[in-house]
Image 1 (cartoon, rainbow, N blue to C red):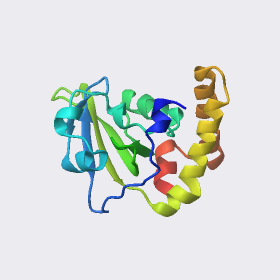
Image 2 (spheres, one colour; image 1 turned 60 degrees about the vertical axis):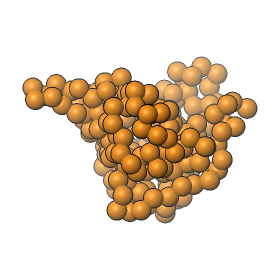
Image 3 (cartoon, rainbow, N blue to C red; image 1 turned 30 degrees about the vertical axis):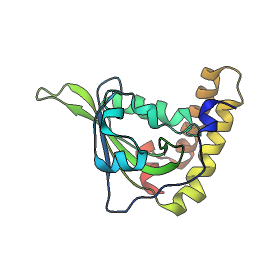
Image 4 (cartoon, rainbow, N blue to C red; image 1 turned 45 degrees about the vertical axis):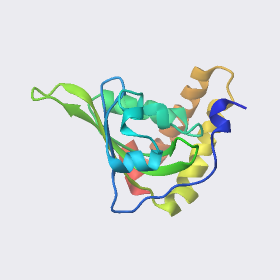
Length: 175
């Protein structure tokens, strides 16, 4: 069992509907700002997280393809909405509906990324997202070659979107 899997408790943390988790990163995804809600849910101090890669809170069950789609979107100047499961320092987890946008300087150049995360709807998680993400993770893990697994899961998501005749943001916001 990987170290990541050992540190997963299976305990879900919740936060209030009126709370927003906020973080900002530089162009490489290193944290430059986090709010108190982020720190409380993730169980880190500001000193522990600033300068660290945002993926320090990545849950090992999160399909890699969702992050590929996210990075492809924001690096091409677009915002993205996506459901994400994060891991707290002790291995607990919390689900969010993330909205990630490029941050710009006064000349319009992208200088980093800004993410606001809200409470995810339990019925959407249980009926759609969790089963889909399990399927995507299984597809990624079914390939000996990590890149092939990633490509297969991205293809699966793109096929789902094509079947529904929706863009990724439209899909995540519709469910």
